[in-house]
Image (cartoon, rainbow, N blue to C red; front, side, top):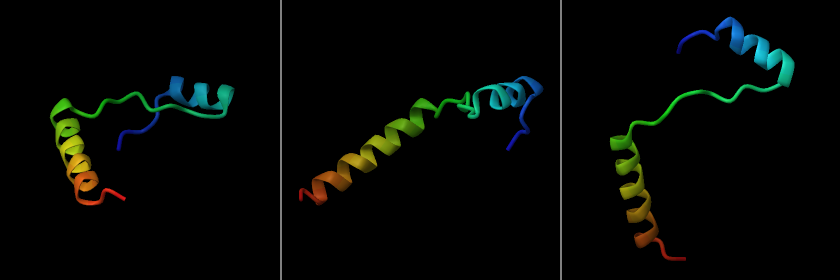
Length: 45
């Protein structure tokens, strides 16, 4: 995991939190959505 940049540290010190700036790759989102759909279909209650 990469270290925080000086601007990220400053933002954390100023705001008290830091929202990560990253994206899950689209292909991985498709896999996760399919797994969620399957789980919900197999467990309707």
